[in-house]
Length: 107
Image 1 (spheres, rainbow, N blue to C red):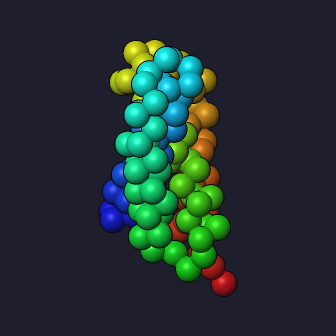
Image 2 (cartoon, rainbow, N blue to C red):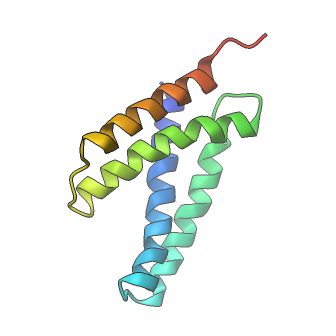
């Protein structure tokens, strides 16, 4: 449960940080948007260090599936564009892959 919460927080922090840059560069938002964006990206990096795994690469790989799902939720909630069946199918496959990477038996 803790891992899921950490990954969800990391995803929101990363997407918000990247969206701040997107907003400044592509949407004409003021440059000060970059400051909270940078803070958000630092928070994202910190949160990933809290994942209970022995290898950083494995934590990042499993996070990829969570990031994809969170990005589609951002698309829907923040940008107002509802994900289609292909988005949902792809995200489901990614979540299964993330679970295999994170919780698969190691031997």
